[in-house]
Length: 228
Image (cartoon, rainbow, N blue to C red; front, side, top):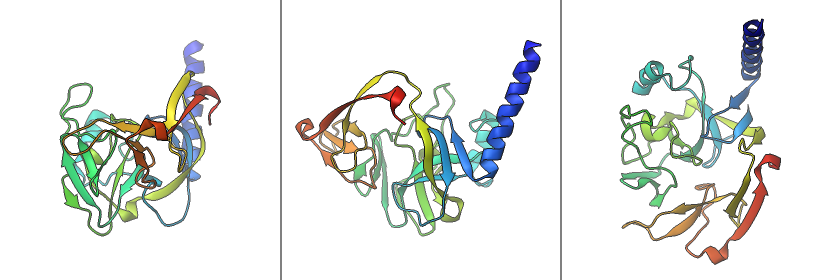
């Protein structure tokens, strides 16, 4: 009886997610973006916009995703990322991460292997983004499966999305610094030979705020369980 109830619950959940997807919504449970529901909307894309897209079958990572089940049982499952770079942007790859127009992105270092130890080939290389292409990555976690690995995506693949309902799954107090320009969380960049110590807005490149003096920032304490 218990197994029957669980099976019915699973089937109903899958059916609901399928209907939400067909209606132009995306449900995200990954750490690449805040967990929740996003809606596909019309409009011109700009850097910093959340976007959804699926990998093309001629992308080597399409088969890798199939073999390793990166996208679950459905290899054509849509991804949800942030549009980081657009045509004409200068992409530079270094041991410290991915830079867009000489600005190092937080949490962007390419890893040689996944957490399970399997090798992660990197298809993104230093380049000028050509027309009709874009770079989509996560600005929320360094473990995201994103453009650092599967490379640039076509413009006609991407659709703009907006958050409808998002939440922080961790019921705990989070202390963070906020950007005085847009209110997004600030990420700390470790000093390297290329950059000095600095804090950068997590909304970059849509917001270009950064500072090397923490005194300029406002410290916020938010209850994540009540933040949507």
